[in-house]
Image (tube, rainbow, N blue to C red):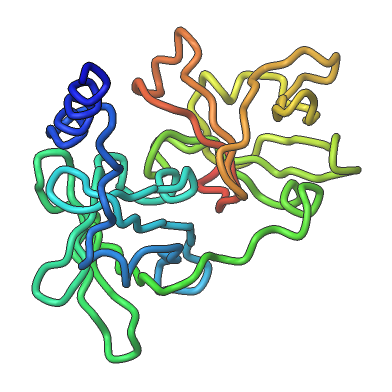
Length: 240
């Protein structure tokens, strides 16, 4: 009899909302067909592109979303917390359910919209192509910036191998970064270290996705507001 009572109690507890025994919530039916990797890109030649992953789990006001570091680095998406469907289109929303980006469906199955800064963007099914290697990635023009390319500092980067290469500041750059003795980079212990010629590390960043490295703001950087620092492929802006 005692065992029967205990067994019944477990069954009752497992049926209560919020109990530890409750099964995980099922994916949202309306979100499942859209779930997966997408590419968000500008519509002009040379515009940035990035991975945006639409989830099917519930989130405040919609479904879960993963905004890659490259998306955050290049577009004004820092406040995006979820996505939903409205009027046949995809809408990215903030924690208060306010619209951050509205994307209308196109006849080809993709979506198009306009960012808050006026840039036109396209959202298309599938992830963007990955770099062939770290050495291939770290050979070109880069930018160090806050979210949405805020206060960028340009660099010319070259790679001798997948673990080391040259680094030269070029173009516009906030004074705090411009006065650093940038000379080389090394990838060690899972981090990208931007260094002076004597090997001193000026900034250490962790890989955040296939294209972008990230670090928290160091103290005393007046030209950069609070928030993460991003380093990844980008256009060198302005004059030195």
